[in-house]
Length: 594
Image (spheres, rainbow, N blue to C red):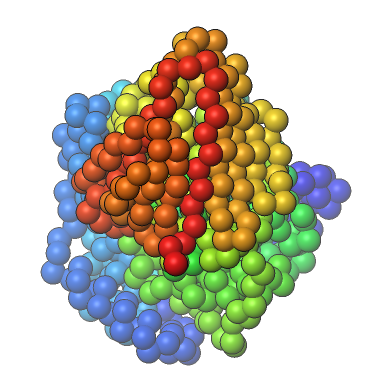
């Protein structure tokens, strides 16, 4: 897409100038005076919070913690604290127009430039400690380049008044660690030269690299060459994205995937003065509107894969997407989720998102009109259907998806404004999360998703373990889950029909096995169920099942802090087991209690 356009119409011909001013500098007092009072107060509170907190030390042993005991946080906490403190000091200066925090800005730039590497420990290559002579560009090296570059653009005069060497040092480090290897090397996997199974790394890194290049490129030819190369990498990522715009990493990754693509598109629009846009492209439109199609009431979202049940999405980016696409419902969602400026750096310190949030006001009334939820993404194989006060969310797919959970055929059922039969979602990342031990984590295993255990056997990871004969129906989804299980389970057929009509949810499974085995149906619940014969009551629902099945309730205390933000206390695992047989047919229904 991008490459085809640039081959026909070279990007250099469309650039206005270089460098590109992305946000109003500190000296533009009229622009900073226009910041809303609530946002100004939020940023000053952020500055107060960090003012007397020193820049955290980043030590070798903190970095080594990842290889020694699997801890990511030992290094990431001080690493991100440094960047947040720097941003807080920059905002203190820009909002107030005063320079009391200038020394804090200087110290932040200096100590980050002095870091041996800008890569986080979990992404290090070539050994347990980074090699300063072989810089790695990961998500956060690119993000660091963006943070330092924007700091130098926002406060150019103030830093030059101390010494020109400050900006020169930052420029040198950004070039050495990010911009030069980005242009010279083709072996970083996320570039798409050596691999085609790309993920959010590509647009996230590229968007930050382009932002840094906008600051430091002195000639339009230089900026055009980098941007052309960068967006051809995005082309390779887009080739891996389904035409329906679905993100198999989960809607929580839209910030880093579709949202990062939006960053690239808006940067391109800015640097060309609006002459180069791609808002008409169907796949782009589908990708940018993906969160709207996955939204549930009360801030909940369809959270398959590594997705929090109530993810923090960038409201301003959704608002922008809605405006660019002419999608009033998407714009309204973004306006409702804008949050605070400081909230934009609470997860990872995405400085551009904070500044976009500040200088893109939520003007005008939102268009709150919305259709009843009835969504089918044929490539991602996700179906969402709303009827009679319930919402059914179900999936086919395969178990080799990015950020995969073994969940072919799983579903979520929402009632009373939130999920009742749930997907547990994501947990705090550790070394185990993206290793051979991934499926020892309970939240990724099929045993803790709403799919059957067959003779005690769970679904297995890998793209070959996929749904077959998948089809959307007027009321839901039908599929065969058999290939999701390994050969030891001996599954010949595992047809699953999910439907929601007239306020009644129906799940029907027909399972044929090579040998007689028991089958256990799993339902992961938000509340503890009250069991009576053939019934389970929870979350305002009554689930009905064959009274011959053997029920069991297991409490799952939610100890992980990330998951506990969405599911405090405990989740509850209801299992219903049928006796050994070669053929199983069970039907389950659920409806709201009268």
